[in-house]
Image (tube, rainbow, N blue to C red; front, top):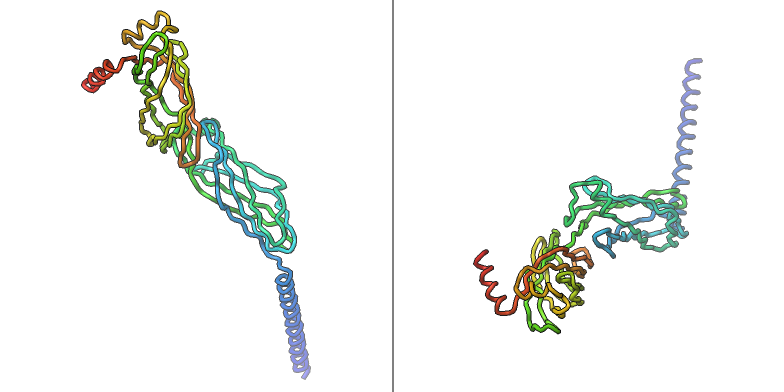
Length: 312
């Protein structure tokens, strides 16, 4: 009998515990449901971010300046602070550059902002660290960005982003003045045409738009010019150009006679070319020191062209 009473009491206690547990669960569900409704009503939510573009506003033989555009959307009714931005750029798993941007701004309530992350790649640093990265090559890269954001209700969040692309390591073209053809000769003023050879040593095309140059013959400056020229130099290819010059032979002194006799004449040339590339516009230097070229009149030049063809 006593045993039966204990069993009944135990069953009642279990029922009370079940009722208590069920009540607590109902309260939890109710609170969670109310919380979700409040969250939905006031519009709290996790922000989103995306890398919308990578631009190269400036690139030359020394460095490339990149700008990474990150679009951040804030669905919350209050502004959220962008605490830090961490970024890393690597190529085939090898770090090229990394950095931290603190206190990067605030994203407006129910708004979106595009954050611009400036990154600079110094080519000397890259080439000195990785011997296999050669001038003229194109290297793949991956940029990783982490956004640290403080969001009400959720707390501090980290939004990781990635984007891949390619970037060149530019190399200046080789130049050579193969010959100079006289158009009009006199001791006071001579008009001539420089036959210029440009060799593109890059793994990408160069769309030549303009060039400026200065030329020295036998250590005497014969001036230069800025010309608008439009041609494409294929990747690892060669292009030929004719450049006009005007000079006074009497300024050359004794070196004039070697020029008239058609002997090799020393020359130097310096300048720049403006080019379009698949990665944006570039200004590349051109230079040649201690070169030797030939000066010929039109008829002599034509005859020698035939001789050159036969030699080749």
